[in-house]
Structure formats: structure tokens, C-alpha cells
Length: 189
Image (cartoon, rainbow, N blue to C red; front, side, top):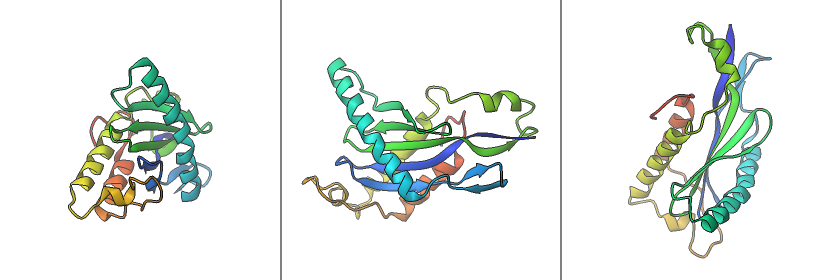
């Protein structure tokens, strides 16, 4: 018997000027066709990532008023529909990482789970499940910043307008590895 467990549908990096820097889209399991395909187009995921900016702004105001929020982990930003949910993290430089999780995106055989198949599909994500993803995304971003040929001001100009997308092949490979290797319960990526 095959069941579906959560998987990453999209990883996004948003610059400090709220400009999209990077978007990676991953295929999800479709039980009707027994195949893998993205749930949405890259443009639709870009719009979903943009919709999280209001939540980041609102939570930042709440954290400033309460003098909290030192971790940068915003947790669940919002449930998009019955299948997708977005989670967020903001660095101290204002760069935002967004993970869109498909709650039924990966097919797993019951035999692989050792008889735990019935409970796995019914359980959502626990608090902290996204921390390894955000840590790996931040590590990949820091590696990108250490590249002497990468100019962060070119991607998030101090003037606040414009900005280029990240075109680093190594960074894209790191994002692909993170998105494809994460499953609930993973502690390091």
C-alpha cells in the first residue's frame, strides 16, 4: 500500500527589498495518474511567495512591539489550501527564505515505513520540522555570499528598486538538493 507524506513543493529566497532572488519548484505525487508533476507553475509559486510578504511584515511589527523575534523563524506563515502551506524564516539582513510544503507530495510504500503507514499520513508537521531546511538554505546563501564574484548589492540594490535574480549554478544545485532530500523527521540536510 502506498501513502503520501509531506514534501517540499517550492523553495524561495526573497531579497531585503522584497524582490524575488531565487525560486525552485519541485514535483509532487499525483495519485490519480501515479506520476510526479508540479502542483503549480513557477509563476503561480512566485505569486504565492509574494503573498507571504504581508505576513512577514505583520509578524515583524508584532515582534518589534513585543521585543521578541530574535530567532528569525516565523514558522507557519499561512495555509494556502488543503494541500499547501508556507513556512518562513528571515535573516538578520532582511533576506527571507520561504518553503512551500505539499502535505501529500511524496509517495511512500507502507512496507518501507515498517507498518507505520496508517499514522504517517494523518499527522501534520510538528514545530521545528522546517528548521533543518532553513539552516541548509541559510548555509547555501552564506556560501553564495562568500563567492568573490557575487555582488549582493546587484541583487538587492541599496536604492530599493530593481535587482537581479541569483544565477549561481552551485546555489541552484544546493536548493535542489535541499528540496529533494527533505522529509519529515530529518534533522540535518
